[in-house]
Length: 593
Figure 1 (cartoon, rainbow, N blue to C red):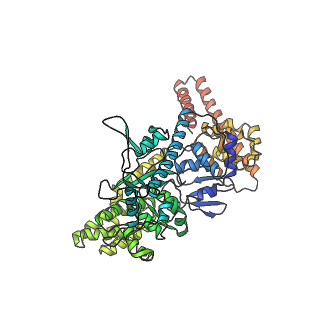
Figure 2: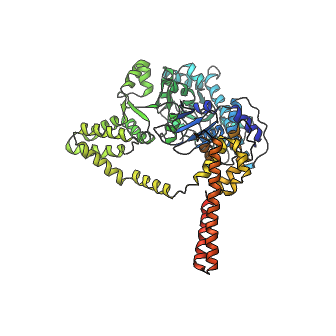
Figure 3: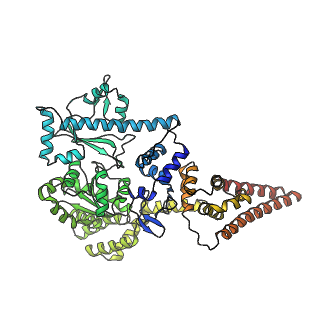
């Protein structure tokens, strides 16, 4: 759908960017701006800035930036119309839509259809569990199973747990009755096409059903668990246009406020682990849906908690799962602890047997990542001379992932003391591994890339920054035809859009953002608008930059023109060709900026 420009402006002027971003990033006020850890890249020191008066955000680390709509789109990975609709719904704004590109309209309508069908099916599964007729042995079996697992009626109700009947075409028949497209259900992952004959069958059969909500409380997918020893024990929805397992965590929609309150989050593996902890009052918990944790998972959680505790079983599978996850947390620079439960326990069984207080006491002794990895390595290799060398080989590959040099140094010292090895020898091993490893090569590649990136004319950037922050100077810029003297075609195009907007408007930067055609331009606007000018006379500062831009352009043009004319008079064809080539290179260079 196409949303009229005036309606977009209404959404932007009504919404509060600080409130919206605070729902997913922990922000702290510092001066005129709010700062937090960027949700779009790995960092330990906050470089993500939000300006309430200008209603923009900008990350000084990765250059992400824009307005509240840009943030919603980037954070949730959704389209512009979806972001606008989300904010409009939050602020009770009615959107009158117009026709848009058919492909975008099709994508938007598909997502709406998938969410709508998932919600319908969730209700069907819930009714199968709670409202089946007396004597329905299948429904009774599912209810008894949940009761045996200690799951209360309140939890069943809150998380809309359900039951999928042991029938091949239960959902298929519902689709026929309600005249819902089977193609939509296939794209939802609810039904599958038969391979050897025509028709469809249900994906989930004879399972306890767990609706998977996104942070906006929409049903994105499902997980199903058998009640016996059948395999596979768990089955999840496949990735769909609305369900991405690398970005969704089970229970986050309910746990996020408790994560904020406590400042940390427990991360468990299974649905029942989450539900049992939540039911026993440990509500700052999420589950990884039985899949490997991803950088996106960690970045999303950083918006709700500064500290994370990984909770695992003490068996080999639990230890290996913990080791696989740790690498991501180290790279993301998160304060992480590892809680390995006593032998024979998982989070579900432990909290049911021992209760909330015992679990909290156990969690107080959760190991740091390095303490955990060291203990695992010691248990594996022992502390003989050969064992200590192998332990050092294990640990060095983890140490190079720590971004904070001071923290890395402390861990190296601790490792040296534990292994009774000279600290310099440990440091040398780590440094050697770093210099020869992929981390160093990646760093060198990034450095080379940065050196090859051409910077735009600083004065032109300053001019745009002044226009955004002090729109009263725009008339002077128009009168002096300053934009014609810009070298950068990109900045000239952006500046022309800026001067096309009435500088007298109250929400000037907001209106500028609306005019930008792509996210790259919005990020530039956000970065320039964030600049603060310390000057007693802004008009004088602006005139100085204007004069400088005009003078440099004229001088450059005059110098090249003079040399070309001189070469032409002297019939120096080689020099003339070189000068023309140089002039073309300059034009080409600034055309890219």
